[in-house]
Amino acid sequence: MSKFIRSLAVALSGIGFAFRTQGHMRFHMIAGLVACCLGLIVTLKPLEWAIILLAIAVVISAEMINTAVEQAVNLASPDIHPIAKTAKDVAAGAVLIAAVISAVIGLLIIGPPLWHLFF
Ligand SMILES: Nc1ncnc2c1ncn2[C@@H]1O[C@H](COP(=O)(O)OP(=O)(O)OP(=O)(O)O)[C@@H](O)[C@H]1O
Image (tube, rainbow, N blue to C red; front, top):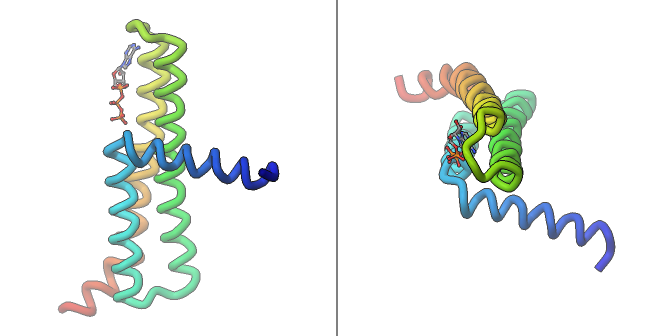
């Protein structure tokens, strides 16, 4: 197997792990799919698509980095430790910021045309 195929395979396996084990990851993916469906309904412009897709990618990437931090912390500190708590809380905070800002971006871009479509 070439190095590129091997790298692709391990990356896909990481995505699969996060999808199988993390409820939040599945939630973010479904939210991203809903945003894409709404984007198709209101026929977003190319720049609007770019911003929506970037927001989806940022949230999913943040959730995956959070998962990696959780796994690494569980390995390094299976017992309760204040630094382990800080590491997990900070990683979770990163996901929260990305998700809230992305939701606002989605509302700003998709909200008005969706409103005009139905009202
Ligand atoms: N080893 C630890 N020492 C101290 N506090 C911890 C430790 N492990 C987890 N915690 C605390 O529990 C919280 C939840 O940790 P946990 O590993 O269960 O993640 P989680 O909530 O299951 O995340 P997700 O739902 O995204 O998988 C952490 O944010 C942290 O505050």
